[in-house]
Image 1 (cartoon, one colour):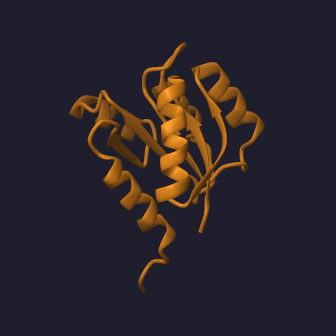
Image 2 (image 1 turned 90 degrees about the horizontal axis):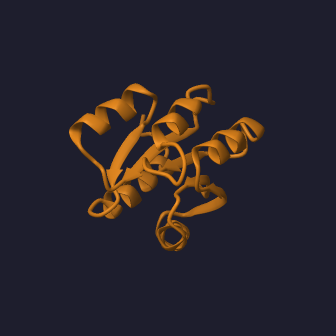
Length: 127
C-alpha cells in the first residue's frame, strides 16, 4: 500500500531528504508539504481526504507542529498523524499524543523505527 503523505517540515534540506527516504524506504508518496503552521492547517482544511498520513515537525518557520497535530483531530479513522522532531522529550511526546498524534519519532535517531511504523501500517492485521 502506498501512503499519501502530507509533510510538514520547514527545512528544505531535511524536507528533500525525508521525501527521498519516505519514497524509497517507506512506500509513500508525498502529496504536498508545508513549512509553516498556517500553510499546513490551510492545506489540511482544504484537503480533508487528500492524505493517509501527516508527518509533522514540531518547530516550524512560523507557528508550531503541535497546532498542526491538533488541526488533524477531525479525521478519518484510517488517517494517521506522526510527529518527527529533534525535540523528542518525554513531555513533548505526551503533549503530542494528547493532541491526537498516533506516533512520535526522534528525527535524529529513529528513522528506522519510522520505516518500521510505515511497514506495520501497510500489513493487514492478523486475525
